[in-house]
Length: 71
Image (cartoon, rainbow, N blue to C red; front, side, top):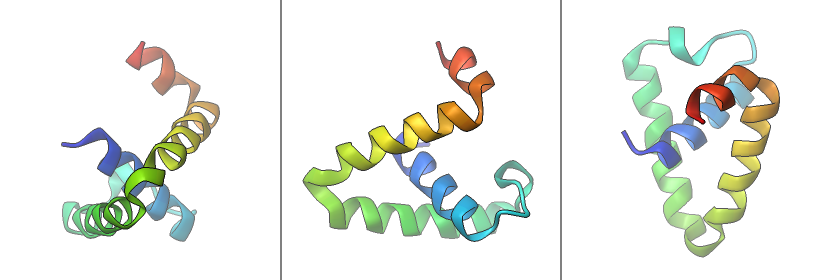
């Protein structure tokens, strides 16, 4: 799984569904958001680096245990 796609897909999902957990969602739904993410990444092209950096920082602030696990 492409980390960038997963990061953007999770952000889209969480922006739309603040009452649900990404990890608990059906694979079909997650794949739909991954497709949205792929499209957004493709449209942003060169500017995607700025978005990904912001998403990584936001994820680290919301879920510090993920940052430690990735390190």
